[in-house]
Image (cartoon, rainbow, N blue to C red; front, side):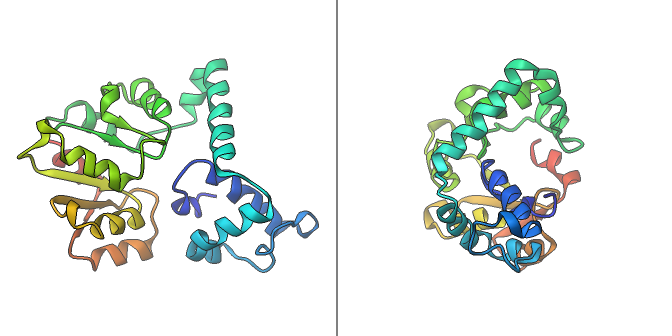
Length: 218
């Protein structure tokens, strides 16, 4: 799963990946039309095409899976917040970078906002105002960036967007309206060597190392 994590955009996709991996290993339970002969490399290369096929084969619904994923997480947090927090972690240096940043920070994530807020408060010791956390359900990241750059308080400021999914950054580049954003691919995040090499060939995108992240927030 760790190898395949870069393909996940939203948490519910983990459920699909686990089931698909089980079908690959256990022919007796196969119900999808794509699992036979499929490899990890094949999933990495073709997840965007595979996902709709297996969801149809399994009669799964995106909204229902999102709700299920969130419901299980809510129940875990309500029952034992300590173990839920303990199952997560920030990369080294990120909490301090957020705590001591002089820049105005917005969180744009595919996690549901309440989970992002809980992790920031409980694990990183950072409080970000709720109106600066854009989570699942607030729209695609491209649209959130458009909203942010129109905010009166951000006029005249230099805008930076740090992301670990190359596909998201490429979507930003497609939007002329977002030409004012400085774009960074965090090379410590869930991306592959191939994606980092591709990002390095795109003039608009800068590769950002973890050690440089805190300096960007000063």
